[in-house]
Image 1 (tube, helix red, strand yellow):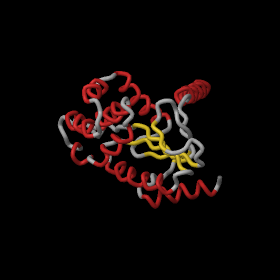
Image 2: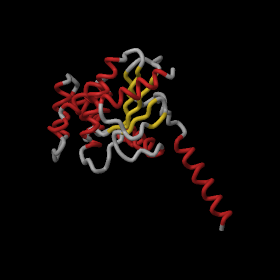
Image 3: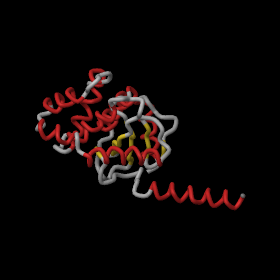
Length: 201
């Protein structure tokens, strides 16, 4: 029984290692959305949910940090739409559909800025199409992208990568590859971590 237990434990570890392969929590992957210079000393990765109010607050804090540390900070956003937020996946799809036309960050900002407008909507798609129109996107192309299976897989891959890293809720932050725990939710808390990381470079 002990031998079987050890074999099972080793098998589990191998599965975790394989699942984590290709997920670079310290740097960008091919599907990542990145702001800031590639040579930045500090990389902050967020797994976020557009329907999550704390994520909305964090978005404001991150904008401030990127303005204050334009040469030293790089920010990577990854999707982790949680199941308790019924419109979170649809919002993630809207951001990715905007990415198809080079407007990910603009839609990212709008989704958080107008979160209260679509938070409880029974059918938020029309609202998202309206945002796309405001951003000057090709609306027909945006609508088509919203239904894309490739786009859906991209969001699911991001969610799966979060789970392999032990993420269970949003927002979740990794700074230079290390999970920030407890999760910093205020600007001052995030900045303290960034300043500490810069001091060690």
